[in-house]
Image (cartoon, rainbow, N blue to C red; front, side):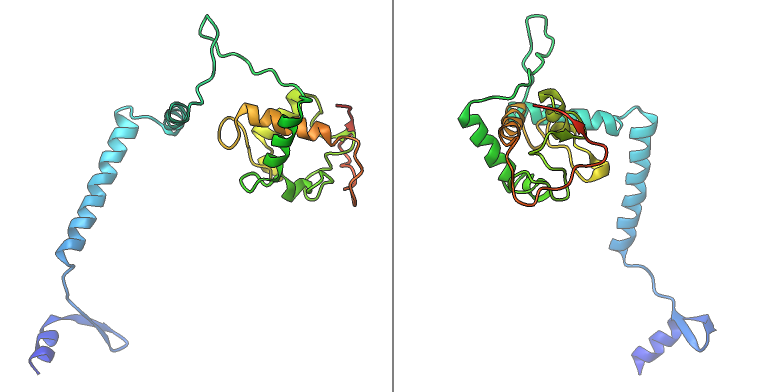
Length: 198
């Protein structure tokens, strides 16, 4: 009965459809957590928007630089300190072609899920014919892999995010090696494709 009386003493005066509300106070820990989030928000706003803290682009560049340093992905530089441009080419080295096939079929990249196990094309285009959408030079094919086509469902695989330039070189060499093969059930060419020989 004492508990009931305590609750009766805590009831607020108003009610709605016979429902009454207890005048309970928030737990102290909840209030301090709430005050902390307010203070954190004010500090965040002051640091990033008023005091010149790094924006999201600068933070991204910092993270990329840290990853490059950690995993040894620093670009090679010439005597003047300029980055050495990677020279794209279709390699005929069988070991590199085999490496490219492993990457193409690997669980981390899953190229075959869109382009087919033999390059015949599924969701993505056929890689075994001579009809290409984005060009067929070594540079163009490498660029397609590195930058991807997010609007068409192909993520970017290069720039060290998933594949190094050397690995991309192996993949494009594998793609060149399957040119002219005739896999079962090849996908029809895209209407935008033009004839292009590797």
